[in-house]
Length: 494
Image 1 (cartoon, rainbow, N blue to C red):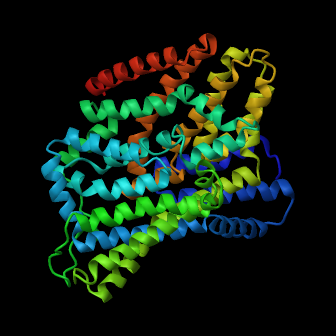
Image 2: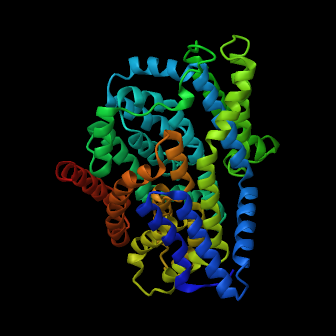
Image 3: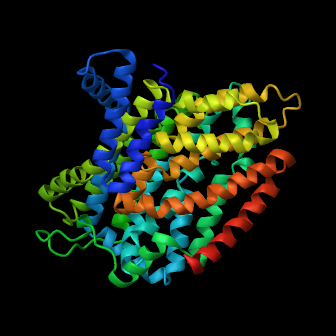
């Protein structure tokens, strides 16, 4: 790695700004990666052609590192396509449409389902989006709202769920024998996760939207949403004869087998504690669950002649093909994150502000939250952000003899990291949320950022209060009042 100073923050800024201005993600991410490699090659004094050599090396390495994720997404989208072709999605839409009579009930059902699937954020986004998308189309609720709800109940829920891959990752970064206990102690101080969940519930009940989200809702109420191709009946098969169970059973098998798969891959059945096992290789376990769902679909559909064998294979190929565009975004995002973290020192440059500042310790939670938010937003990764910041935060907190500031500071680190993961255009969770909802990625980003940033501002004020009082519930209460008040005002004025 070469320390490139302030130039290290240019690549993510270039990618994000271009994406927001041009509303075209692929070229924006590519130019971000290219600029990062150019900075590295110039700083290292290497020849011009090394830019492309390093770029393809990094890209190939990231594909290899995330190969299980690619396999999981391919299997999962094959299952999604098969469920649509069987008529299961359409049958579920009719059934749920009878049970969920109002838009409020549908939004709340989405949020509850998102909270219940807390094992992994990417799995959460794709599963909830698949299940709820036909109901949103039927009730003319915007895909942007669906993408926001599933995104807001993905990472924010996983970061406070004791049984999740996130909990194990955080505990592993805390160099203490009681790392998991320290993680549990940070939950009341993780204002962003708690306030985001509360805000989702309030919006689902009240329907008080503002800005571009409000326009999206008004447009959907008049024009409706486009129906995805895989949710339409295959004309060669005629009208699908699927039932609700043709959707419910494969999804249920996927969830159960994914949890068991994560436990198996992590060594749970060989004596490893469950909380550690599911964090060892979560995407490997998810791949087993998705494959089990694919086998279940075969057993359910072929003998009943709901789908012919040839059409079954064609649906698998078509499903995998439909995941290629978002997969390309993921690969470019992984590459950009690798350039920033492993080559030009973006994280070290930003985090150095924390370690070199001489501000009072009472301001530390606020400062840590802001720095973590900027890092996570620019790099598109919460895990990479708190992985770099937690050791620095622990070292700074050693100067506090009372030790009272450590847990609030760790909570602020996790909260800021999740904010960036929640709304960054290059975050894999953001990409998977727009994929699961089948919402145009940039439209999801531009409708979600004002909501996420509103919560982040309330969090920043809350951490100022916590830093001086050491009482998280006061900061949380102030944040709730600020968010509800702002939503009521913005709904009327903006």
